[in-house]
Structure formats: structure tokens, C-alpha cells
Length: 123
Image 1 (spheres, one colour):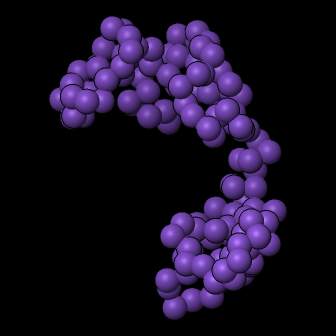
Image 2 (image 1 turned 180 degrees about the vertical axis):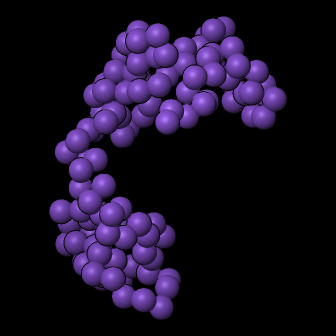
């Protein structure tokens, strides 16, 4: 079943935006496109029109939208365990080995770190 919000259309989404988002969140267009998908460096609107994505930031620049080389290992990890952190009373190989891998790759002088985000390398 498709999400009803995907079928709402740009006019309804603009109405919802005006009602529920703070005014500083604005668009560069009077009639912004309703984006429903992304492929590589392209965005696709609800009519199928494609746009070169020059706004989404570093993740899209380096990896693109819907990159299966990234999505497949992430999906595998999510099917195993969605979240772990270094501040729980539990041990998990991804957290502890992730800290070691981070230390080795970045070459920190300090060997111990506190993980403020989850370190779960998929490979």
C-alpha cells in the first residue's frame, strides 16, 4: 500500500508545510516540485520529471540516491540488529570492533573514544 502523503500532491503538501513547519523552512521556488524518488544524482518528481540534485549535500555527492552498494549491507544489518550503543550494559561485536576500525583508519593518538553515534560497519 502506498503512503497517502505521496499521493497528496504539491498543493496539499505546501498547505501542510505552511500549517506545521516553522516559516524559516522555505523553498527557492514558488511552486516546488514534489520529489518522490532519487536515483544516483537525480531526483524524480510525482509526474516523472527528473532534476539534477545539486542541493542534497555530501551524502548524495559521494554516494548518490538509492545506491545499492550501500543499501544492501545496511538492509542486512537492519535485519540483524537495528541499533546498539556504547552506553548500554550490553556488548556487541559491531560496536567494539567498530571503535577499533575507526581508531585504525583515522590514526588517532588517543586509543579510547566515546561513541556518540552508532558504529556498525556493514562490511
